[in-house]
Length: 122
Image 1: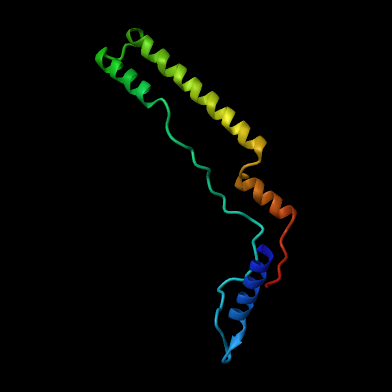
Image 2: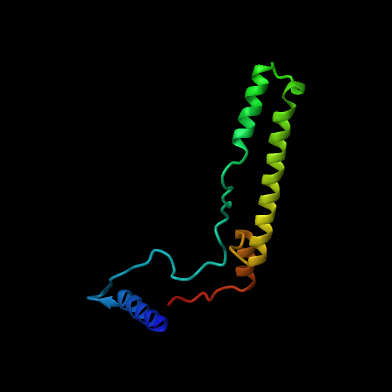
């Protein structure tokens, strides 16, 4: 079924690119070939963590004129939350790299340059 869809698509593209009444029905402004590079976009960072602990710590600082000794419990709670979040992020990145997932744009570009696409149009 998927092979038939590909054949139908190829026929439609060739029909649109063929000349009708002396001019093409579809004139591409770029060649219809894949590039050997991927756009270098940054991966999404995700959501912020430990916001409530940080706001509690800052409120404590404000109440106590920014004396660290009086807000040690809030600071410890914030630092433990940050350590847990970093460990979870590291664990998540290790799992995604082991499972395959999406490649980083630099890795994809390196692979595409190693195995370039054909430079002929359809």
